[in-house]
Image 1 (tube, helix red, strand yellow):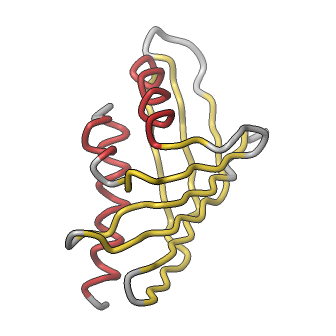
Image 2 (cartoon, one colour):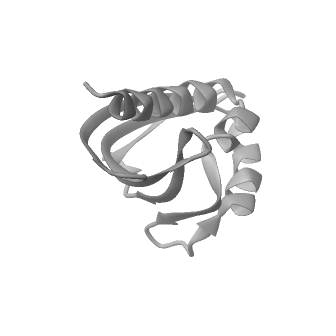
Length: 127
């Protein structure tokens, strides 16, 4: 495995660990300032909106599983396709909800690191 691919795998693992820990500041260091997030049924979200939305996650316990399906690197650009599963449980108690699906992330090599610049997340509620 080449260094860039390993660095992208590390970015994914770091993102998941920081998200589960509620470490929004760490997650934000993995995102380009011009990042755009796409989700079904919602308008595109820019980095400041993403950061604000992270505050609502503090009330939830998240358990995330990611299975990387593909990583392709083309110079300073790369994409990563993941199969995700999220188990979301209210910290105040209640029933866990499971969401799963695919995400496709576009990454840019910037200042010596891979950073997320676009993300299309197709995670939906499991029935």
